[in-house]
Image (cartoon, rainbow, N blue to C red; front, top):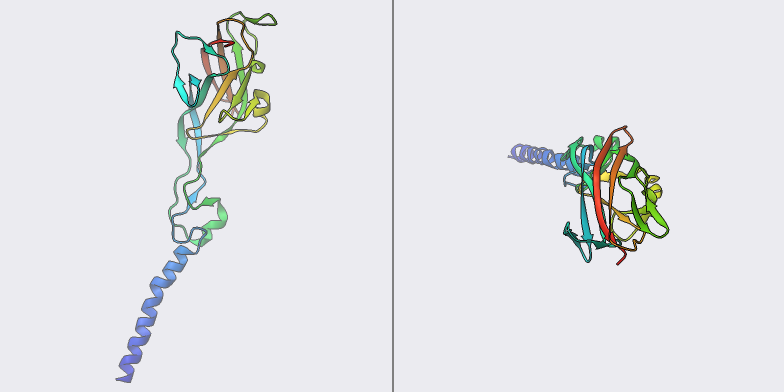
Length: 211
């Protein structure tokens, strides 16, 4: 009888170790027993753009209306991409030191960085008594760029940040010179990435005034 109880005890003990050790192996990472995510990346295939009016939120514009130049924005964003990494699920401890992980889905960034932006004027237009845009002018200095409508930067300063695009992130251009009448500007936008790819938006327009 003693042998039977002893056998039962050791059998139960060792059977109990199997799920415990398995749990320890799966739950001793930085996220406990929850899924582990690798930092995700994607490669860019296309961009899109639109013009919008900004008040307390974004509004689509009326194409026949002129807007105060401080409230009209030209937006662009990544509209086509290819994922390079996926959720890895639960991983054994020996994988944790080989890559960066997060305990919840991390922000997804492009592998490419923004190298240059060129805004090229397409028609001659008088802005005010001191400024006139000529055909072919690079007009970057006439715009600021912003990500959130709160922090605004010169385009050349923004390019120094080696910006990597996020999913669903939009960047916005705003014309900063004050017109003295209703004017319409036409310009091309060239976006160059560090891999040499150039994306062009032809004959973008903005109808603006000085308020």
